[in-house]
Length: 83
Length: 154
Image 1: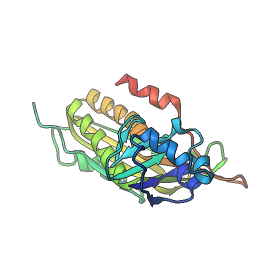
Image 2: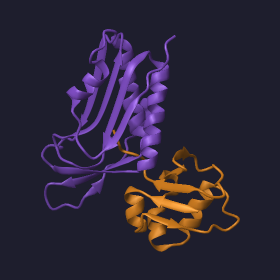
Image 3: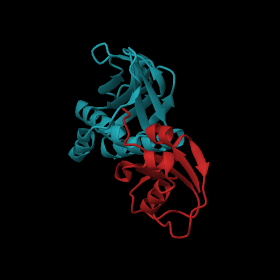
Image 4: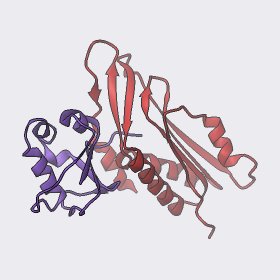
């Protein structure tokens, strides 16, 4: 699975993109955020408050209850401040 | 019922020319009775801000802005619609975003432009970082709850 990060999520994690192999029990977006946070260090700092993290799967906004696809691009970022 | 117009969407680092964008939608046309433009600009926050740095998610920015534009074209009888959003370093007084809506009548043009700005704020993947004039570290702008609230009008 390809993960991409933006804004302060990117800065805190310390990378823009990475490819991860998820355990079988990581089934939803919420599971993914929990799994990443449990990696500790920079991930724990970036995902301290997982509720505020916004997520997109293949460029579409999704909720934390959304099931993860088998493959694809998952983006994690803070609430947007464009316009 | 006429077909919805085809929106013109650009995400770019370069500045834009508001007059040229009005001409694109209204030039040579006799059916366009109203053109509304909204230009979002970088303000200096009372002299405190040196620049904004705007980060974006390129593939998603294009698709999300196009989706919001198509929704506006479906809901209002527009003859033309342009959205331009810049990224990169932008200084006070410079342009950030442009929405141009054209229609036979003003109400559709005003409403569609207002709708588009509300939706861009909460759907388009852009993030602003403030670089202060003096010494202090740069900081990410926080999203406002009122922006999410504004969507309920539509």
